[in-house]
Length: 381
Image (tube, rainbow, N blue to C red; front, side):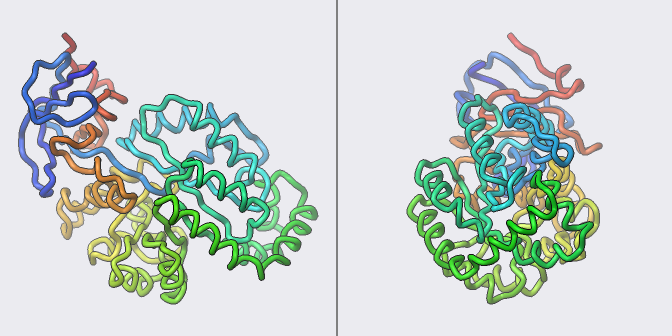
Protein backbone atom coordinates (compact mmCIF):
# COMPACT_ATOMS: atom_id res chain seq x y z
CA UNK A 1 0.00 0.00 0.00
CA UNK A 2 1.32 3.44 -0.95
CA UNK A 3 -0.72 5.46 1.56
CA UNK A 4 -1.40 4.54 5.18
CA UNK A 5 -3.09 6.71 7.77
CA UNK A 6 -2.24 6.23 11.44
CA UNK A 7 -5.23 7.71 13.20
CA UNK A 8 -5.81 9.13 16.66
CA UNK A 9 -2.63 8.09 18.44
CA UNK A 10 -0.58 10.07 20.94
CA UNK A 11 2.32 11.02 18.66
CA UNK A 12 5.79 11.80 19.98
CA UNK A 13 6.84 14.92 18.11
CA UNK A 14 10.36 16.18 17.49
CA UNK A 15 10.21 18.44 20.56
CA UNK A 16 9.81 15.32 22.79
CA UNK A 17 6.16 16.29 23.40
CA UNK A 18 3.13 14.07 22.83
CA UNK A 19 0.16 15.30 20.81
CA UNK A 20 -2.91 13.47 19.55
CA UNK A 21 -2.99 13.65 15.77
CA UNK A 22 -3.30 11.68 12.55
CA UNK A 23 -0.29 10.80 10.40
CA UNK A 24 -0.29 10.17 6.68
CA UNK A 25 2.45 7.90 5.42
CA UNK A 26 3.05 8.07 1.68
CA UNK A 27 5.80 6.63 -0.49
CA UNK A 28 7.73 5.45 2.56
CA UNK A 29 7.83 8.93 4.07
CA UNK A 30 5.85 10.93 6.62
CA UNK A 31 3.69 13.25 4.56
CA UNK A 32 2.49 16.77 5.27
CA UNK A 33 -0.47 16.26 2.92
CA UNK A 34 -3.99 14.98 3.49
CA UNK A 35 -4.51 12.53 0.63
CA UNK A 36 -6.85 9.56 0.73
CA UNK A 37 -5.35 6.49 2.34
CA UNK A 38 -5.62 2.91 1.14
CA UNK A 39 -5.53 1.69 4.73
CA UNK A 40 -6.17 3.15 8.18
CA UNK A 41 -4.61 2.01 11.43
CA UNK A 42 -6.62 2.97 14.50
CA UNK A 43 -4.05 4.09 17.10
CA UNK A 44 -6.50 5.56 19.60
CA UNK A 45 -5.33 4.91 23.15
CA UNK A 46 -1.83 4.04 21.94
CA UNK A 47 1.51 5.81 21.64
CA UNK A 48 3.00 6.46 18.20
CA UNK A 49 6.79 6.68 18.48
CA UNK A 50 9.74 6.94 16.07
CA UNK A 51 11.13 3.56 15.06
CA UNK A 52 13.96 2.29 17.24
CA UNK A 53 17.52 2.60 15.90
CA UNK A 54 19.91 -0.02 17.29
CA UNK A 55 23.55 0.78 16.52
CA UNK A 56 25.04 -2.17 18.43
CA UNK A 57 23.33 -5.54 18.60
CA UNK A 58 24.86 -9.00 18.47
CA UNK A 59 21.93 -11.17 19.57
CA UNK A 60 21.81 -12.51 16.01
CA UNK A 61 24.82 -14.66 16.94
CA UNK A 62 22.46 -16.96 18.84
CA UNK A 63 20.60 -17.64 15.59
CA UNK A 64 23.84 -18.38 13.75
CA UNK A 65 25.22 -20.61 16.50
CA UNK A 66 22.56 -21.55 19.07
CA UNK A 67 25.01 -23.97 20.71
CA UNK A 68 28.81 -24.17 20.53
CA UNK A 69 29.72 -25.95 17.33
CA UNK A 70 26.11 -25.99 16.05
CA UNK A 71 25.85 -23.59 13.10
CA UNK A 72 22.95 -22.57 10.86
CA UNK A 73 23.03 -20.78 7.49
CA UNK A 74 23.30 -17.01 7.71
CA UNK A 75 20.17 -16.48 5.60
CA UNK A 76 18.01 -18.44 8.06
CA UNK A 77 19.61 -16.69 11.03
CA UNK A 78 19.05 -13.23 9.58
CA UNK A 79 15.44 -13.94 8.61
CA UNK A 80 14.63 -14.98 12.17
CA UNK A 81 16.59 -12.03 13.53
CA UNK A 82 14.64 -9.59 11.36
CA UNK A 83 11.38 -10.97 12.74
CA UNK A 84 12.64 -10.40 16.30
CA UNK A 85 13.79 -6.88 15.50
CA UNK A 86 10.47 -5.82 13.99
CA UNK A 87 8.46 -7.46 16.78
CA UNK A 88 10.37 -5.24 19.19
CA UNK A 89 9.94 -1.99 17.27
CA UNK A 90 13.47 -1.88 15.85
CA UNK A 91 13.33 -0.49 12.30
CA UNK A 92 17.07 0.17 11.83
CA UNK A 93 19.60 -2.36 13.12
CA UNK A 94 23.38 -2.35 12.96
CA UNK A 95 24.49 -5.94 13.37
CA UNK A 96 27.64 -6.03 15.47
CA UNK A 97 29.55 -8.60 13.42
CA UNK A 98 32.90 -9.44 14.97
CA UNK A 99 35.77 -10.05 12.56
CA UNK A 100 38.27 -11.83 14.75
CA UNK A 101 41.30 -14.05 14.34
CA UNK A 102 39.22 -16.72 16.09
CA UNK A 103 37.72 -19.22 13.64
CA UNK A 104 34.07 -20.18 13.86
CA UNK A 105 31.29 -17.81 14.95
CA UNK A 106 33.48 -14.69 14.87
CA UNK A 107 35.87 -15.70 12.12
CA UNK A 108 36.38 -14.72 8.51
CA UNK A 109 34.04 -17.35 7.03
CA UNK A 110 31.16 -16.26 9.27
CA UNK A 111 31.85 -12.62 8.39
CA UNK A 112 31.69 -13.31 4.67
CA UNK A 113 28.59 -15.49 4.98
CA UNK A 114 26.68 -12.83 6.94
CA UNK A 115 27.59 -10.03 4.53
CA UNK A 116 26.66 -12.16 1.54
CA UNK A 117 23.31 -13.07 3.11
CA UNK A 118 22.58 -9.41 3.90
CA UNK A 119 23.39 -8.45 0.32
CA UNK A 120 21.24 -11.21 -1.14
CA UNK A 121 18.18 -10.69 1.04
CA UNK A 122 15.20 -8.38 0.62
CA UNK A 123 14.74 -6.93 4.09
CA UNK A 124 11.98 -4.81 5.59
CA UNK A 125 14.06 -3.77 8.58
CA UNK A 126 16.99 -1.59 7.51
CA UNK A 127 19.75 -4.00 8.56
CA UNK A 128 23.30 -2.67 8.38
CA UNK A 129 26.81 -3.85 9.26
CA UNK A 130 28.65 -2.72 12.37
CA UNK A 131 32.16 -4.13 11.90
CA UNK A 132 33.62 -5.04 15.28
CA UNK A 133 37.27 -5.11 14.23
CA UNK A 134 39.53 -7.17 16.47
CA UNK A 135 42.81 -5.25 16.54
CA UNK A 136 45.06 -8.33 16.35
CA UNK A 137 43.30 -9.80 13.32
CA UNK A 138 45.93 -8.65 10.85
CA UNK A 139 45.45 -11.70 8.62
CA UNK A 140 42.00 -10.39 7.62
CA UNK A 141 42.91 -6.72 7.35
CA UNK A 142 42.86 -6.61 3.55
CA UNK A 143 39.42 -8.23 3.51
CA UNK A 144 38.09 -5.64 5.95
CA UNK A 145 39.59 -2.79 3.93
CA UNK A 146 38.03 -4.12 0.74
CA UNK A 147 34.59 -4.47 2.34
CA UNK A 148 34.78 -0.93 3.72
CA UNK A 149 35.75 0.40 0.28
CA UNK A 150 32.85 -1.55 -1.28
CA UNK A 151 30.33 0.15 1.09
CA UNK A 152 29.49 -3.14 2.80
CA UNK A 153 30.35 -1.70 6.22
CA UNK A 154 28.29 1.09 7.79
CA UNK A 155 29.98 1.55 11.17
CA UNK A 156 33.45 0.56 12.38
CA UNK A 157 34.22 -0.24 16.01
CA UNK A 158 37.67 -0.88 17.42
CA UNK A 159 37.72 -3.98 19.64
CA UNK A 160 40.66 -5.50 21.44
CA UNK A 161 39.66 -8.63 23.32
CA UNK A 162 42.91 -10.45 22.58
CA UNK A 163 44.83 -9.51 25.76
CA UNK A 164 41.89 -10.67 27.90
CA UNK A 165 41.60 -13.93 25.95
CA UNK A 166 45.31 -14.59 26.41
CA UNK A 167 45.04 -14.03 30.16
CA UNK A 168 42.07 -16.36 30.46
CA UNK A 169 43.69 -19.23 28.59
CA UNK A 170 45.37 -20.21 31.85
CA UNK A 171 41.95 -21.29 33.14
CA UNK A 172 40.98 -24.50 31.28
CA UNK A 173 37.24 -24.00 31.87
CA UNK A 174 37.18 -20.47 30.46
CA UNK A 175 39.62 -21.39 27.71
CA UNK A 176 37.33 -24.21 26.61
CA UNK A 177 34.53 -21.70 26.00
CA UNK A 178 36.73 -19.90 23.47
CA UNK A 179 37.90 -23.05 21.75
CA UNK A 180 34.34 -24.45 21.58
CA UNK A 181 33.10 -21.21 19.99
CA UNK A 182 35.96 -21.40 17.49
CA UNK A 183 35.24 -25.05 16.70
CA UNK A 184 38.72 -26.33 17.50
CA UNK A 185 40.53 -28.21 20.24
CA UNK A 186 41.88 -26.32 23.22
CA UNK A 187 45.46 -27.16 22.25
CA UNK A 188 44.91 -25.87 18.71
CA UNK A 189 43.32 -22.69 20.03
CA UNK A 190 46.23 -22.04 22.38
CA UNK A 191 48.73 -22.44 19.55
CA UNK A 192 46.73 -20.06 17.40
CA UNK A 193 46.55 -17.48 20.21
CA UNK A 194 50.31 -17.66 20.68
CA UNK A 195 50.85 -16.97 16.98
CA UNK A 196 48.46 -14.02 17.07
CA UNK A 197 50.16 -12.60 20.16
CA UNK A 198 53.47 -12.59 18.33
CA UNK A 199 52.13 -9.97 15.91
CA UNK A 200 51.41 -7.38 18.61
CA UNK A 201 53.98 -4.92 17.29
CA UNK A 202 52.07 -4.63 13.97
CA UNK A 203 48.69 -3.82 15.57
CA UNK A 204 49.09 0.01 15.59
CA UNK A 205 49.81 0.06 11.85
CA UNK A 206 46.70 -2.04 11.25
CA UNK A 207 44.61 0.39 13.29
CA UNK A 208 46.03 3.29 11.28
CA UNK A 209 45.09 1.64 7.99
CA UNK A 210 41.55 0.66 8.94
CA UNK A 211 40.72 4.00 10.55
CA UNK A 212 42.00 5.80 7.43
CA UNK A 213 39.78 3.57 5.28
CA UNK A 214 36.73 4.34 7.43
CA UNK A 215 37.41 8.06 7.24
CA UNK A 216 37.78 7.85 3.45
CA UNK A 217 34.47 5.98 3.23
CA UNK A 218 32.73 8.49 5.51
CA UNK A 219 31.48 5.91 8.01
CA UNK A 220 31.25 6.61 11.75
CA UNK A 221 33.72 4.98 14.12
CA UNK A 222 33.46 3.78 17.69
CA UNK A 223 35.78 2.44 20.35
CA UNK A 224 34.65 -0.39 22.58
CA UNK A 225 35.10 -0.99 26.32
CA UNK A 226 37.40 2.00 26.89
CA UNK A 227 39.10 1.42 30.21
CA UNK A 228 40.81 4.80 30.61
CA UNK A 229 40.41 8.40 29.48
CA UNK A 230 43.73 8.08 27.65
CA UNK A 231 42.39 5.14 25.67
CA UNK A 232 39.26 7.09 24.67
CA UNK A 233 41.40 10.11 23.70
CA UNK A 234 43.59 7.92 21.50
CA UNK A 235 40.62 6.54 19.57
CA UNK A 236 39.12 10.00 19.20
CA UNK A 237 42.35 11.07 17.52
CA UNK A 238 41.75 8.25 15.02
CA UNK A 239 38.33 9.72 14.29
CA UNK A 240 36.15 7.58 16.58
CA UNK A 241 33.50 9.88 18.05
CA UNK A 242 31.38 7.10 19.57
CA UNK A 243 32.38 5.64 22.94
CA UNK A 244 30.79 2.21 23.42
CA UNK A 245 30.39 0.78 26.91
CA UNK A 246 32.94 2.83 28.85
CA UNK A 247 34.18 0.74 31.75
CA UNK A 248 33.81 3.56 34.31
CA UNK A 249 31.85 6.75 34.76
CA UNK A 250 34.98 8.89 34.56
CA UNK A 251 35.64 7.65 31.01
CA UNK A 252 32.07 8.33 29.94
CA UNK A 253 32.12 11.77 31.50
CA UNK A 254 35.34 12.68 29.71
CA UNK A 255 33.91 11.41 26.41
CA UNK A 256 30.80 13.58 26.80
CA UNK A 257 32.92 16.60 27.73
CA UNK A 258 34.74 16.13 24.41
CA UNK A 259 31.44 15.94 22.51
CA UNK A 260 31.44 12.18 21.88
CA UNK A 261 28.38 9.94 21.81
CA UNK A 262 28.37 7.52 24.75
CA UNK A 263 26.63 4.17 24.13
CA UNK A 264 25.51 1.74 26.80
CA UNK A 265 23.34 -1.35 26.81
CA UNK A 266 19.59 -1.39 27.33
CA UNK A 267 19.82 -4.70 29.24
CA UNK A 268 21.83 -2.79 31.84
CA UNK A 269 18.84 -0.48 32.36
CA UNK A 270 16.17 -3.19 32.35
CA UNK A 271 18.09 -5.49 34.69
CA UNK A 272 19.04 -2.66 37.05
CA UNK A 273 22.78 -2.83 36.45
CA UNK A 274 25.63 -4.21 34.39
CA UNK A 275 26.08 -7.99 34.33
CA UNK A 276 29.83 -7.26 34.48
CA UNK A 277 29.60 -4.94 37.47
CA UNK A 278 30.41 -1.84 35.42
CA UNK A 279 28.68 1.55 35.50
CA UNK A 280 24.88 1.83 35.71
CA UNK A 281 23.47 2.85 32.33
CA UNK A 282 20.34 4.32 33.92
CA UNK A 283 22.34 6.54 36.26
CA UNK A 284 24.62 7.71 33.45
CA UNK A 285 21.63 8.41 31.18
CA UNK A 286 19.96 10.49 33.86
CA UNK A 287 23.21 12.42 34.34
CA UNK A 288 23.43 13.17 30.61
CA UNK A 289 26.56 11.03 30.20
CA UNK A 290 25.01 8.08 28.35
CA UNK A 291 23.39 9.50 25.22
CA UNK A 292 22.59 6.30 23.30
CA UNK A 293 21.17 2.95 24.37
CA UNK A 294 21.65 -0.17 22.24
CA UNK A 295 20.20 -3.68 22.39
CA UNK A 296 23.69 -5.06 23.09
CA UNK A 297 22.74 -8.75 23.39
CA UNK A 298 18.93 -8.64 23.88
CA UNK A 299 16.55 -7.01 21.39
CA UNK A 300 13.46 -6.71 23.66
CA UNK A 301 15.39 -4.56 26.11
CA UNK A 302 15.40 -1.35 24.04
CA UNK A 303 11.71 -0.45 24.16
CA UNK A 304 11.48 -1.50 27.77
CA UNK A 305 14.55 0.51 28.79
CA UNK A 306 12.86 3.76 27.70
CA UNK A 307 9.81 2.99 29.84
CA UNK A 308 11.99 1.94 32.81
CA UNK A 309 13.82 5.26 32.64
CA UNK A 310 10.57 7.21 32.41
CA UNK A 311 9.21 5.34 35.45
CA UNK A 312 12.28 6.34 37.46
CA UNK A 313 11.10 9.94 37.16
CA UNK A 314 14.23 11.80 36.06
CA UNK A 315 13.67 11.57 32.30
CA UNK A 316 10.23 11.84 30.73
CA UNK A 317 9.31 9.30 28.08
CA UNK A 318 10.12 11.66 25.21
CA UNK A 319 13.70 12.20 26.37
CA UNK A 320 14.12 8.55 27.28
CA UNK A 321 12.89 7.53 23.81
CA UNK A 322 15.47 9.82 22.20
CA UNK A 323 18.15 7.51 23.64
CA UNK A 324 16.90 4.67 21.42
CA UNK A 325 15.79 6.57 18.33
CA UNK A 326 16.81 10.19 17.65
CA UNK A 327 20.23 10.02 19.30
CA UNK A 328 21.49 6.76 17.77
CA UNK A 329 20.27 7.97 14.37
CA UNK A 330 22.34 11.15 14.76
CA UNK A 331 25.36 9.24 16.06
CA UNK A 332 25.24 7.02 12.97
CA UNK A 333 24.77 9.98 10.64
CA UNK A 334 21.21 9.00 9.64
CA UNK A 335 19.44 12.32 9.25
CA UNK A 336 16.30 10.86 7.66
CA UNK A 337 14.93 9.05 10.73
CA UNK A 338 14.63 9.20 14.51
CA UNK A 339 11.85 11.81 14.59
CA UNK A 340 8.24 12.05 13.45
CA UNK A 341 7.94 14.99 11.10
CA UNK A 342 7.12 15.50 7.41
CA UNK A 343 9.89 14.47 5.05
CA UNK A 344 11.36 11.88 7.39
CA UNK A 345 11.41 8.15 6.69
CA UNK A 346 8.14 6.60 7.89
CA UNK A 347 9.62 4.34 10.59
CA UNK A 348 7.18 4.09 13.48
CA UNK A 349 6.34 1.83 16.39
CA UNK A 350 2.87 1.86 17.92
CA UNK A 351 2.99 0.92 21.58
CA UNK A 352 0.45 -0.01 24.21
CA UNK A 353 1.87 1.76 27.28
CA UNK A 354 0.12 -0.65 29.63
CA UNK A 355 2.60 -3.38 28.70
CA UNK A 356 4.57 -1.76 27.38
CA UNK A 357 4.16 -3.85 24.25
CA UNK A 358 4.53 -3.43 20.50
CA UNK A 359 1.16 -3.31 18.74
CA UNK A 360 2.51 -2.43 15.29
CA UNK A 361 5.83 -1.67 13.64
CA UNK A 362 5.93 0.35 10.43
CA UNK A 363 9.17 0.39 8.42
CA UNK A 364 9.54 2.83 5.51
CA UNK A 365 5.76 3.18 5.43
CA UNK A 366 5.09 -0.58 5.32
CA UNK A 367 3.37 -2.47 8.09
CA UNK A 368 6.16 -4.81 9.13
CA UNK A 369 4.75 -6.32 12.33
CA UNK A 370 1.27 -6.57 13.84
CA UNK A 371 0.26 -8.10 17.13
CA UNK A 372 -3.14 -9.81 17.30
CA UNK A 373 -4.57 -6.65 18.87
CA UNK A 374 -2.93 -4.60 16.13
CA UNK A 375 -4.44 -6.68 13.36
CA UNK A 376 -7.89 -5.86 14.70
CA UNK A 377 -7.14 -2.15 14.40
CA UNK A 378 -6.17 -2.20 10.71
CA UNK A 379 -8.79 -1.35 8.10
CA UNK A 380 -7.91 -1.79 4.42
CA UNK A 381 -9.93 -0.29 1.56
